[in-house]
Image (cartoon, rainbow, N blue to C red):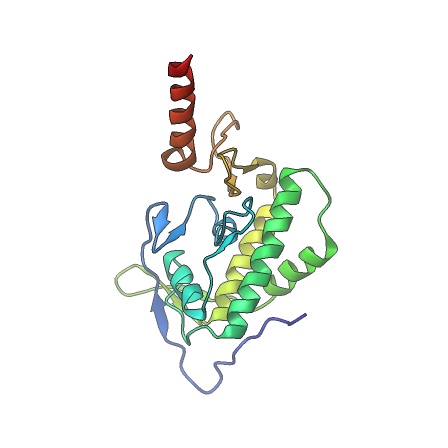
Length: 208
């Protein structure tokens, strides 16, 4: 199994990368409905419950797009095919870990090892730019994936794990953090799965 790579910045000055201020649930073709960046990475394999899921991270440039949409980019240097393979490996390990938490099952040692290995990789350093906005230093693909892994470790290993929910929307496999006071949220998004479920319920009542 490949190990995370870290590119040395020795001998050159790290340049800050300005992270955009992403907003909204749909950004550049990706869904951001999990409430945590680690959960949003798992949503880049869409339609997990279907016979043929849709891979959204097809090429290295797709990973670069997702990192920017997630507020972690821009990425420098551009991701490679190896970075893409690492991102998919980390994504699937995170998905299995959070699913185990939702279903109250023990965590698989292999998945813990992948998340822990990436979380131990040097992550980008957040800095305040002159205009008061956040900028990243060391925003290389491996460092940005390390930031996602650390988010996963913090989420799965904290009390927030008890708030992890699997969306009950028809065919939806998104796992999200339920921040509602009652802790009984059913859908990853009221604008998406929640709205469709309510429309179906309304039509079913009208048909009676």
